[in-house]
Length: 290
Image 1 (cartoon, helix red, strand yellow):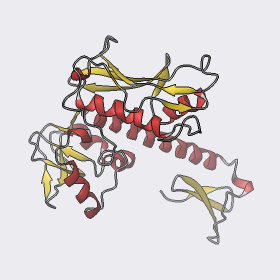
Image 2: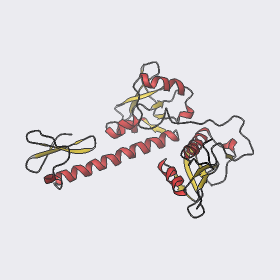
Image 3: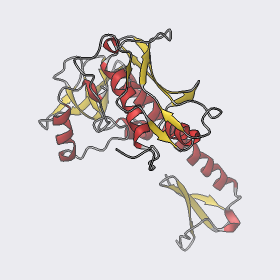
């Protein structure tokens, strides 16, 4: 973005999300001069910067939703949004998979086609550039990537930098011998917090919904929406602190699911939430870290 006139002697521009100024002599003060802070051009540019920040955050949230649920994304849609810098920065370097599992690689570009479609360009782990011709691609949840470790090892080699946590997202795989009669996972249960507000605040900061005595995460998997929940109590009944409970999963109707019916994505995301709550617990003599 170029420089815009502000007041009689200054110009302003947006640099790294911040409005900066320069004088006619090209002097650049460390902060906005007092005489132009209320200038309409400055206010307009500041509002634009706020919108850009909001827009970028929205792109990250949307792409994370596609990735967490491994939803098919039309290549035509990728072609439409790719020219937008916020979308491009969010999508670039994510691992995408075409109609053939062999069509897997790091997204580096999207070519527009004459029929308003798009051809994603990916770099494979072998270093080759591949054009994906399928009408949709997946941005797989890492638990679904059989070559995850190989992709991780090549990420540094190719200079991969992901805005959406995919390759290095913590994952948990459901034990093959899951108890058919059990409907909860207690691996990270018992995380104590001196204050319920700290526990609820951590869950919210991690992006989870807090309500009805639970912290929850919702995942679309195999055509249905599943909810993973950890009991955290409420502010009224936890005067002496709060403790995170087991992870339980429920179907779209709210009915509990046996562990054998929990898919790999829902399992991983539920355990990821529980592990993160456990990591932030309060350690005291009565509640040691071990």
